[in-house]
Image (cartoon, rainbow over all chains, first blue to last red; front, top):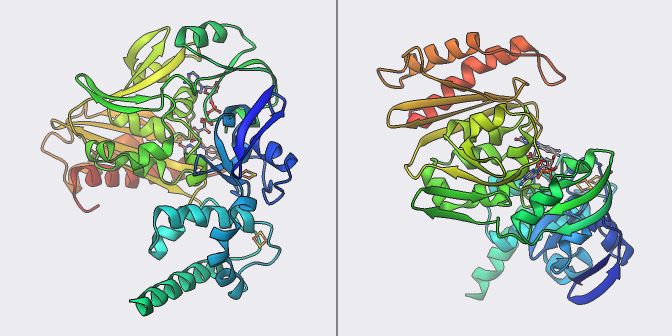
Length: 157
Length: 264
Ligand SMILES: Cc1cc2nc3c(=O)[nH]c(=O)nc-3n(C[C@H](O)[C@H](O)[C@H](O)COP(=O)(O)OP(=O)(O)OC[C@H]3O[C@@H](n4cnc5c(N)ncnc54)[C@H](O)[C@@H]3O)c2cc1C
Ligand code: FES
Ligand code: FES
């Protein structure tokens, strides 16, 4: 069947099977940042934005996403750039497999809540599993980014 | 994975219902549960074009469309006020926001899963369901029915605010619950549901009059002890029957006191 959607700002029309999952569809379009880390909708590695909302791309049919707008990390590099260095500075990640999904959901968090508390960060990111770290480094990284942003804003005043 | 032969975005409920009468058809909710099944599907029926993704307050109560996502339920200010935050408490620990942005309430309620916090909380809230086919009925009636071929279109909540709360015990933050308890108090009438026993949520009312003098720490404990004796519990990978019975004494008390607005 024909799938028509806006992927990272570009309208595309492609053929796909009725049971093709969005994760496999976007990967076939070269969006290889989108990873599969489980078979049970549990890990968050496959997070993409569907009409601006973070969703598990392993849990949506490409057919349902047809007609909608899909963004992957490939299209959101500029927005991610701001904070990923802070996470890397904490040495938070080991294998890095969980990183794209984590970054996508952090973008969603900061869009919805630009100044979250630690509890709000944890509640928002709880569905992003990392099997190498204990999440502390990622939390410190986001905190450091938020603190640096505040310091910059203060300076600018 | 499901092997889907044909995908149809139904353009009317009648169309969805007609397609659904075939044994090989399946209605897609969020598909999070379905996709773990390994079977061929003739027609996958998508309800996403039918405007069932709305939460509306009408004359006869609150209408929650079957395609309203768990995240919408959690974030809706009107439902938050109506239920004292109980819906957000029930839904918040389910996997993560990306999951809850996809999973519609219809899939959870239609599934009538034993572990379902949604079924538990909606029973306590006194919800009704509307089925294209069988019509409107109390949720407890629907919960007891065998799986049919109707389409769940809406969940209804009474207009009158309810003091309510939902508590669960989980082995890790976002795992399936070991036990869920929810309480709703409207006009002094208490409805209490206990789910993940691990059987499907059971609804209790105060048939013994234990709460007739109001919900206090003592009466809530008496009710919770009675509930723990009255209900059946089983063992599974997440906990034993005895452990669940012990949890019931705690979580039912906490849910009642939290609903009443008392410190647990
Ligand atoms: C990893 C994981 C963890 C979970 N943890 C929890 C938890 O902690 N607590 C909890 O309460 N729940 C939990 N759930 C369950 C979840 O909240 C949903 O209830 C479940 O995924 C089913 O919803 P769905 O939208 O995915 O339904 P689907 O898989 O799409 O559908 C489920 C069934 O309902 C049918 N159906 C769907 N919508 C309709 C409709 N409108 N009319 C008629 N039939 C319909 C489908 O045909 C199917 O048979 C979890 C699920 C997963 C996968
Ligand atoms: S691949 Fe694990 S949640 Fe999608
Ligand atoms: S760094 Fe390896 S899974 Fe997160």
